[in-house]
Length: 118
Image 1 (cartoon, one colour):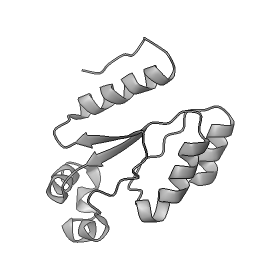
Image 2 (cartoon, one colour):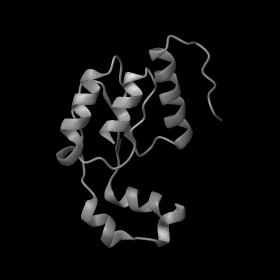
Image 3 (cartoon, one colour):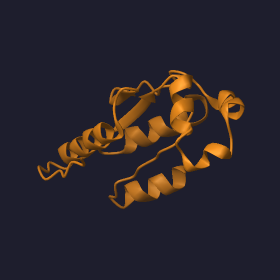
Image 4 (cartoon, one colour):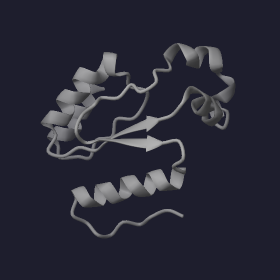
């Protein structure tokens, strides 16, 4: 993951790292990449375990694993605590999240042409 991210950064590409990236395991790497990048956007979904389960139930992978497995990896409030980190709360819709990130990306690129989704 780090090698791929570095390759993208070295070639002036937008790099997106997404997933359940625990601070204990990935924090140092992520903070180093953030520090080395010209610009970065960092988001943390601040979801309770119950909300995480509710959202998981609507995924295609919902039958592959359930609450017992998820309880083993769920880490509440597992933030990076970097200055640019933004919290996304449970009450944000998917559309709100996407539009917020698109707006942030446009700001990084000094672009006014953001096409929000509806």
